[in-house]
Image (tube, rainbow, N blue to C red):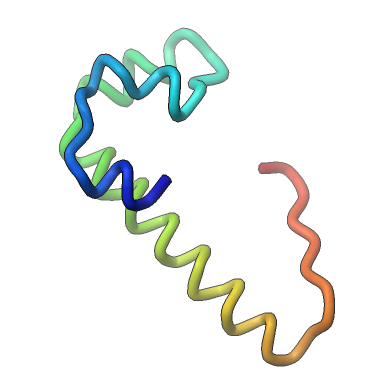
Length: 66
């Protein structure tokens, strides 16, 4: 997902990839597309870092609500 988003995808094809849950969420994402795309990539990067850090000290990682 992160690589796909980093490759500057066509904004109109994101719905199939991201799967916006609510109708307004896609509209809001598109209103500030460049900023939101960068923030989404940053969130994925942070999540990857967190998982890597946690995997050192724990055997299992459970993520609820995603």
